[in-house]
Length: 230
Image (tube, rainbow, N blue to C red; front, side):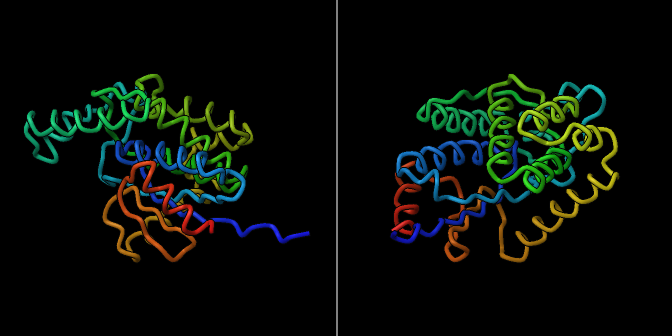
């Protein structure tokens, strides 16, 4: 029998609330599907925080956080015109991919989200982590899911296979052994990103040798995947 083809290794640094990570993820997943590589691609999701100092959600979840517009205006210093121009561009990209995109979204710390993500990846597997990440992103950018609500996070983590006890501990006690283990992975990912020069996301590394920073379109991702699959 012929040897099985080598897997294509993808290491992806991303933040869940990053709009460029959203359109980039959709384009990458579509490219994987169109190239027929679902069985060969091995994707590891690495944590990255766009703003480590973003406000932490309280009991009200996303409802108690500033909006992305307020954040960009007050912390980044962008004008309303600059914000609208950026949102229009991103909405056009989302439209071209056939996915929803709401203009106004809560903006806060994603550290707890990344702890859930890494717990899922370590405990259930890479496929479950990819599904969890996609569910949170799709819900966030469609305005249908409050990803800053720990109850919602626990529900979605259980849905992809994380044991209920682990999900409950992550939601209620971030300093529990489960939370600390996930936190260590998040911290390591962020430190590694700094070491290899990641300044923004998405940041994709293929087969641990070729970096593709920034969101690419479907055609570009297909070409890249084909190069390494061949």
